Structures are given as C-alpha cells and as structure tokens.
Image (cartoon, rainbow, N blue to C red; front, side):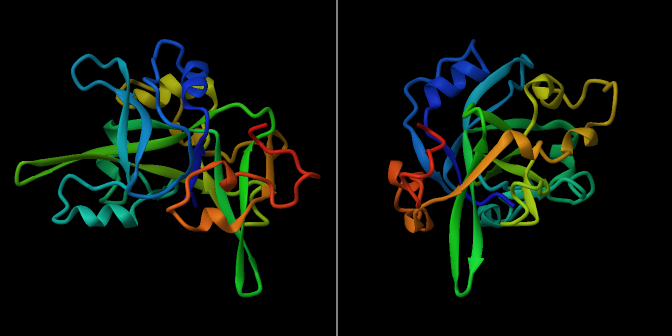
Length: 231
C-alpha cells in the first residue's frame, strides 16, 4: 500500500517532471499523510491540457453521502480498480499523476513497526498513477485523489506485499488521457517498478506521527553508514 510519502524538493521535482509548470513556491513535504492536500497533475476539464493542482488525498466518490469516506480510500488496488464502484468511473475518465520523491513503508519487528523510506536509486522525483473525483454537496466541493497499488517488487516485499504504481515518464501522457484509444491496455502499466532501480533504508520513528513534517523524518536511522535519499 502507500500510506505516507514525500515531496521534499517540489520546485525541482516539478521542473524536472513537467518543465512547463511553475511550482509556485510549494513547501517541502517530508511526511505527507492521508486527507492532506497533495500536488497532482491532471487534465483540465475544458481544454484537456495538463494542469498542476492540489487535491485532497483520499478519494471521495461523487455519489458519497459523507466526505469522511475518503480517509478509507487513499489507495486503489490495480486489479479491481476498473470494477469497484468507488473507482470505476474515475478509471474510465479521471486519471492523474501524484508527484513524489519517496514513500514510506513499515516493517514489523516484534511489537514495533519500523519505518523505511523508499525511492529511486538515482534520487529523481517520480509520479504515482492516480485517480481523482469531484464531490459536491450543500454548496461544498472537494476534489480528491487516490493512489493505485500493485504487487511489491523485491525491494519493497520484505516490508509489505503491495507498493504504489510508479509510472515511467514515457507513460505520463497516455495515463492522463484514458479516453483516447490506447495502443495497448493500460493494465500493462501496473507492473511493479524495477527493484534494481530503487533504494530502501530505515528512518526515524518520528515519521510515525503526522504532526512531524521535517527533514528528520527522512534521515537514515543508521547514519552515517547510510546516505540519505535526498543528499
């Protein structure tokens, strides 16, 4: 699954992934948690052109009675995303890219859970495959998103059997335009990201508390032997 992630250098990440966008001075995020706003790229409803927006993490289906349901829909399993009522309409027409440069997973160690930070070996930012929806009720409107998950690769599997779907950059445009006739089924994009291109190391338990959102959350727990993903 994906329950926390990072975007520690948003200006650099957005310039790297989408050179035409201005990050607008987004603050570094070291411990992004569900229900918080996250930087997302989606297609503008009128023009169809990509736009950079902040969406609430945790998808609220447009038919939901209560927006609190979004707290339980932070992830969508890629195997069932096309058929589950909460996600199927979004899968057909409302895709997005959730920007990140790392994500956390926890390893059970007796009665404790030890957090680890996972990212790309080349330290570059990336994008999760996401879906979004717009919920309206009583004059209120909330745009929210979820992150797709797939089977874990060899890097993540010692910690968890699931991992977020990380899209190759060559697939960004294809993912953002699900209504366009595809040369091949989108399901092929749900393969686990290559394990040899990823890195994982334990970090401080500080990240366990959502009130902390600072560089200490991503510092290696076994420094100085381990280099930080963001050095």
